[in-house]
Amino acid sequence: MTETVAFVGLGNMGGPMSARLVRAGYQVRGFDPAEPARQALAGAGGTAAPDLAGAVRGASVIVLMLPNSDVVDATLHDGGFVAEPGATVVDMSSSEPMRTRALAAELAERGVTLVDAPVSGGVSRARSGELTIMTGGEPADLDRVAPILAHLGTATRAGAVGSGHAVKALNNLLSATHLLVTCEAILAGERFGLDPETMLSIFNRSSGRSGSTENKWPTFILPGSYDSGFGLRLMLKDMRIATGLADQVGTPDPLGHAAAELWARAAEALDATADHTEIVNWLRKDPAR
Picture (cartoon, one colour):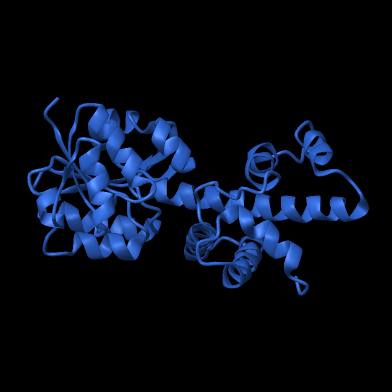
C-alpha cells in the first residue's frame, strides 16, 4: 500500500489513530505542535513532519483531529496548508456543522474535498480501532475514504457534509444530559440509603438504563478512577455545539440549554483537566445546585 495519509493532530485520540493507519500499511506523515506527539508517531513507524506543509504536501488524504472549529479553520487557512487539487480532507474533530459546510464550499473552489467524520468511543477504542464514526459528505467522497476509516472503527453515513459533526454534537448532548440526571438520581438514592450497585442493576433492567448506567457509572465512577479519556470541558464544548445548532435551525431546546449551563458551572468549579465523569464530584460538593 503506497497511499500517503497526512494526519494533523497527534494528541490523545490522533496519536493512536495515526498509529493504527501505520500498522495498516499506509504511509502516514503526521504533524502536531507538540514534539512528544511527533516522536510518538515516529516511534510507531510513521513520519513526523516538522511543520504543517511537510505533512500535507503530496498527501491524497488529510485527516484532521483537532480541538475545535477555530483550530480547524486556522489550519485550513494556514500558509502551510498546501493541499493539492484532488486531495480529500477528513475532519474528524468535533467541529461546528455550519462552519464545516462553509469550509467545504471554500475548499471546493480550490479543488479540495472536505468530508466530516467525528468519532465517539474515547482513547481505548481509538487504540483498538473500535470507534463509532459519523460521516458527512457526498457518497462518492465517503467511498474514497471508507477503507481508511475502516481501520479506525465503524462508520455510519449521516448525510451531507456537516451531518457527522451535527449528529456527534447531538449525541454528546444526550450523553451529558443522561449522565447528569443519572448522577442526581443515584446520589438521591444513596442519601435515602440505597446501594449504588443495586440501583444500577435495577436501572439496567428497566427503562432508566443508558450508557451512563451501563458503562460510565460502573466503569469510571464507582471505582473512583474517572479516567474515561474524555474531558469535561470537551463534553461541554460539544453540548454547546448541539444547543447552538438547535438555535440556528430554530428548534426548542430548553432542557439542552439548562444541562449545558449546569455543566458550565461544573467546568468552572473543577480542575481544568477533569474527566467528564467527575461531574458527580461537583454534584456531591456544590451546595447551591
